[in-house]
Image (cartoon, rainbow over all chains, first blue to last red):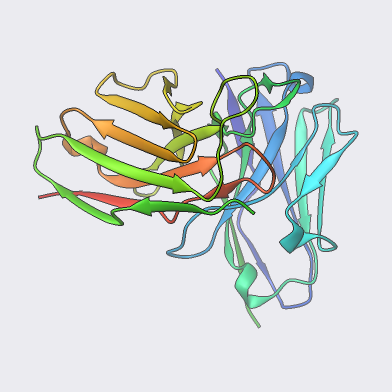
Length: 124
Length: 112
C-alpha cells in the first residue's frame, strides 16, 4: 500500500532553516509528482509547491519563492522540503502529498495520498 | 491566483440527514479537455486531509457512495446523502487548474 513517512518534529529559531524528509513506498516513485502543503495552527491548508517525477523541475508558490527548495532522490524514493529564513509565522504542520497521476500531460494538481505531517515550530 | 469561497463555514447536521457544502471559484475551472480541475477533501480531527472527490464528481478510492460531487465552471457542491457521526471534520474545496493550487477556507461539519 502507498505510504508516505515524514521525518519528526522540529524546533527552530527565527532565521534558521529546516529540512523535512518524506519517504515513499508502495508505488513507482518516478511516475508521480509530489507536493508540499502546510497548515498553520487552527488554520486552513496552503500549497507550497510541487516537484516533478524525476526531480528535474519544481514549481513553487510565489509566496515562498527564494526561501523554499524541494528536492527528490529517486534511489531512496525520498523527497525533501527545505525552508530557510524561518519566521514565527512558519510555525505549522507540513505535509507531503502524492499527486493522483498524469492529467493533460502534466500533474493532476491534487493530493491522493498524504504523509502524517511534520510539526515545525519557530520559537526564540 | 484563483480564489475559492466556501459556504457555509459551519454546518451542524443531525445524523441521517443530508448535508451540502458549496464552493465558488473566481474563474472557471473547466479545462479544454472537458474536466473541471476541482476537488473536495476532508480533514478529520488529528489526521491529514484525505481526498474525497476529484475532477468535480469522481469519488476517490474507498469513499462511501453517500458522498457525491457536482458542478462545473465556477460553482460546485458536495452532498452527503445521509450524514454519519464519522463524517465530522473540516471539508475543503480546491482547484488544480493552475498553480498556485488554492483551497477554500474550510467548512466545519459537526453533529447536532
